[in-house]
Length: 347
Image 1: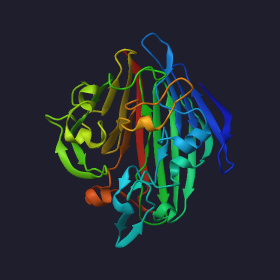
Image 2 (image 1 turned 60 degrees about the vertical axis):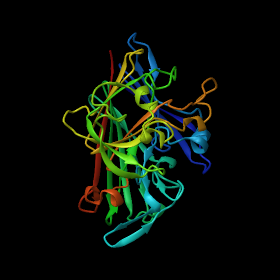
Image 3 (image 1 turned 90 degrees about the vertical axis):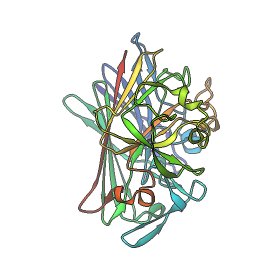
C-alpha cells in the first residue's frame, strides 16, 4: 500500500490543488482536494489489465468550468430543493438558485467547488485521505455553522466514503458523492450494455423539473431492477418517466436493505463489477442523460449521452417538502453521519 501526493494545478482563486493517489495490490484511486473529487478508480478486468472506471477531466480548469460534478462531494444538499426554499423549526430559508428556480447540489459555490483541507490516513490494513471544510451560517442560504469531514478509505478491493457533519444550530445536511461509473475501462463504451441490479421495490417519479412527485412500484415498469437487467432496456424505453429526464434515469430509488449489497453494476465484456453498501435510505441514479454537453473527456474521447452512471446514496430527495417526516435534521446533539462502500470485483 502506498500514498503519493503531488501538485495538480491552481484554481482561479489561486488555491493549490493536490492529487492524492492511493494504491494497493488490487486497485488505484486518485482523489483531489478540490471538491473531494474522485478523479480515477483503476481496477482490473477479467484479464488482469487495469483500467479507469470513472469519468474525469484533464485539468483543474476543466473541473472549474465544465464539470457536471464529476466525482465530487455534494453538499450541503444532494439533489434539488424546490423553489430554493425550505422551512425548519418555523423559520424559512431562501437558498441560492442554480437550476432554474431550484437549488441544485448545494448551490452556486457548493462543496464540490471548494478546496478542502486534506491529510493522509494510514492504518494497519488501509490507507486513505481525510478531507475537512467549514461552512459558515447562511452560506448558499443554509442555516448553521457547519463542520464537515469526509474520509476516503481504501482497503483491499473496497473504497469506503465516510461523512461526518457537526452544526451549532439545527440544519439540513444531505451529502453524497457524484462519481460517474463506466466499467468498460478507459471509456471504451457507454453504459447501455452494462447490467444493473437493485434491492428496491419502489422508486420516486419526478416532474419536468426533476422534482419528486410520487412514490411508485417498480413492478412492470422500466424501473424494475430487482433482477440483473440490461441498462439499455430501461434507457431506450418509451416510459414517460424515462422520457421526462431526457431518455434515462434521474430518479430516487427507495432501498429495501434486505441484503447488504443494495446495488450491483456489471460489465460482462470487461468482467468488472461494482457493488454498493450504504446506510442511506435512498439512492438517486443518474445515467448521464445530458453528458453530451460536457465536451471531450480527453484528447481522444468525446463525452456522450449515457457515458456514465451515478449512484448518489442519500436521504430522500427534497425531503423537507416531499417527505418531511423522513428528513434527518442535523442538530448539535444529533450530528450527521453517512457511510457508503464501493466493492470492486471481476468475473
